[in-house]
Amino acid sequence: MLIAEAGAIPHLVDLLYAPDAGTQEHVVTALLNLSINVDNKERIMASEAVPGILHVLENGSMEAQENAAATFFSLSGVDENRVAIGASGAIPALVTLFCEGSQRGKVDAAKALFNLCLSQGNKGRAIRAGIVPKLIEMLTEPDGDMRDEAMTIMAVVANHSDGQAAIGSMNVVSTLVELVSNGSPGNKENATSVLLLLCNGDPFYLSIVSSLGLVNPLLDLAGNGSERAKRKASQLLELIGNH
Image 1 (cartoon, rainbow, N blue to C red):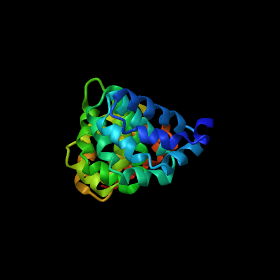
Image 2 (image 1 turned 90 degrees about the vertical axis):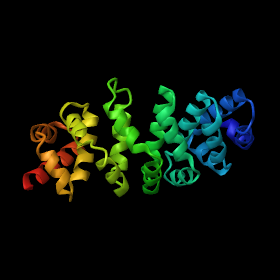
Image 3 (image 1 turned 135 degrees about the vertical axis):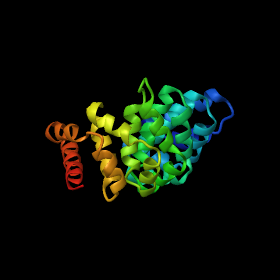
């Protein structure tokens, strides 16, 4: 806090463009640590740091990219910051890190993308950047290292019409049904939410879901899940029952 109050943030922002990779790493890490404080989030945004953080995300070492993504995650905890970060061009760079980064980079990018995609306009940006095929790939990977993160983001982008269209075009219904049956509690809930969005008003997807033996897993979720899971499961059961 004292560092920020002393006026250090604008000087740190200038150093984000330093040609030395080590300097970039240290600077973006310092901004990440400072951004944990709510007042500092405002200071960082006011210092026009977003283009510099994006520069590091696109050009820095992998460690610097990880911390740049983590900084965007921290800053995007404030509603109004999500719009500014999304408008900066950060989302395609975050999608690239999510697809191609180190394991930590993928996780940091996933957290930032989830927060940013709580803004409707950013959902469209992530979809246009090609996130949906990667989400589906991560759902079906044998090790499942990123399955939880992928399912969480999918549940958010599925609330966008382009997201529903992209998810529906990828032949993923059987994978979602499997997650409702055998996934973690969070994945059961999110997969049910996505299936509900796909099936609501579309008899094609509803026919597929109805044929895949989903009723018993949904009944279990409606009885034993979280409040949100119970609600989504009950709504999907009603659609299947009326089909």
